[in-house]
Amino acid sequence: MDDAAVYDARLELVDFVIEVFWDVPDETFVANLLGDGLQLPDAKVNTSLDEGFDLLRTFVANNDGRDPAAVRDELAQEYTRVFVGPRPPVLAHETYYRDDTDFIGEGLAQVEASYAAAGWKPPEEYGEENDFIAVELAFLRYLVERQFHGAEEAFGYERVFLDEHLATWHEAFVDDVLNETEEPLFRAAALVFAGFVEFEDELVAQMIS
Image (cartoon, rainbow, N blue to C red; front, side, top):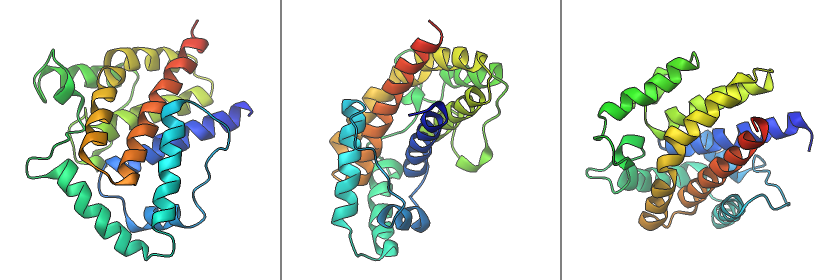
């Protein structure tokens, strides 16, 4: 796989996880998954990604021939139960999982400082605090795009962000998702998230060694 293909794959992975977790997956996204939009690698990558891809195949097989709108409505019910509530069992925020800060406490400012250091401003479309999973992954996407365009310092920003933020809480979040829902799409996205962080950690370590 050439460099451009690797960058494309990284962006596709992060876009998939953002799309699943930032809000109820929309009908177009679901239709794309159930149609011809799902292209998964045959080669092994890492355990979490491989398991996530298998669950994605299960999701597609389970819903083969169904109306995407009906599938989306079922996903909406489960998304609301797990991630919105009232009293959701899973909160997709870094400061919820960190022991050294209160939920939406001073740790939020630390996350925002990482964004500012790299010259990035969170988009307003997510409607959540800036330690929300979709926002943190949007920042990672920004860094990957900068790397693709030759900004070597973006690898350093990613190294710091993984070590100080994303990698400090993603495993606990993934465990909670796997414990709280049997929905294959959400379980798949959690495992892809875990595998993506592992992949990025190893890649960045190679680039700045």
